Image (cartoon, rainbow, N blue to C red; front, side, top):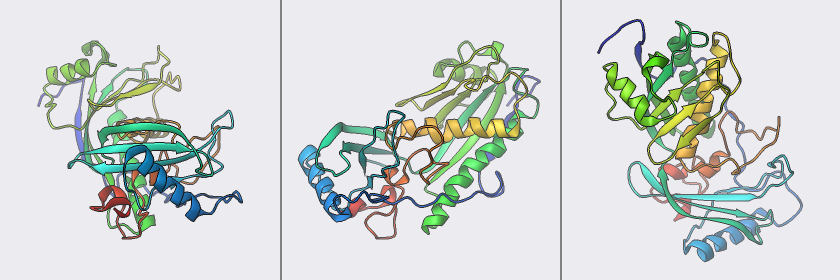
Length: 312
């Protein structure tokens, strides 16, 4: 592995002590909360169970349901959401998703079963920091490592709050800083990998390739391209000076909580919020029950890890 002034590789096993303390997210209910005075939770569960059978031909005895009336987009629209991950291998799952009316009397959206990366296990990430001198200072990789540790602490705190023996999700990251002149297109996975290879970095065996391009001359957001593990984070807050620890925490949260979740099948309207509304599962990006991270069938195992998920 070569080392020069343009880049530095830092391999970190992210875990305890890396990102400081974390407050466990408040457990959200898997069934409607708060109550609207409508159908009982049991009646809604029955209706959702029947919807899975009718729409997908699936028997889901204990469906994962998120139906918090506070969950609305900025137009005031909300819905009941239910998701079922059925594992097809060690890394993948078929995701079935339904949106329904709050009382579960009608299906308002059905997503065909889609093969996605299962949201469970240890994920290896190759992280390329595009080293713009104005934003990515000499200590950037150290600050990023701490921020990545906090993401792992968030998942560990969630697992502890549920009484699970270990986190459901964990990230191991290899961080590399590369001068922007060496990357043909930081928004393109192949270009990012080619730049890493040209710097002597091995690129095999990674679940995610993450490009962090905080270009002070360009305001842009981020994206994920499910199917190839690529994540891009741009300068979405218009940073023009050297990034602080809190800045890197925002960037890491965007990459690992937000964009990684798209690879697990998440879309923004699973459990929508508007403005400063919080629903209790933050800093996780969406209702954990929908990712299979809750134990809805009462056997002590989160559904995404369960050999008999959702009571099947």
